[in-house]
Image (cartoon, rainbow, N blue to C red):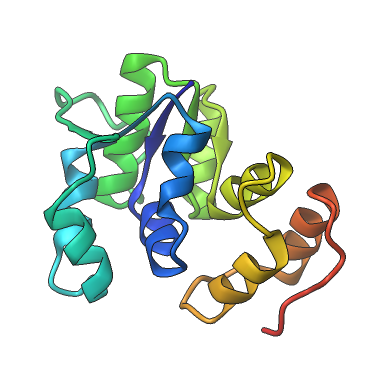
Length: 164
């Protein structure tokens, strides 16, 4: 399955040491150049900038022709570009964390998951222990609602909630 990634899931997977889950879960991982630019931005955490400055062979930055971002005016550049790329290549899934972007992508017929979904799927396949990964995630600036965290842990089989 081809996955198109936005900045946030890549960033947080790097910060918790789990970005290598992506090539284990997906046949191809693509991102628009706008996402790579955000990963390289001076405000991005240093480990994220370091990762993005030497992209691994399993990750492909792909330019997209400018599509009509109708209904996406309030989204960030990386989110808009990721949605347009996913649509143009008919990606199997798009990785987005921001609620507004997830809603737009779903409304456009895209299958959506985020950082928590990636971790949950990896846990289901025995690639990561979910509770410790979520504990590491909770120590970053990752924002989530308690309801979303509970739903994720319930869905993927763990009952242990991290401290917020």
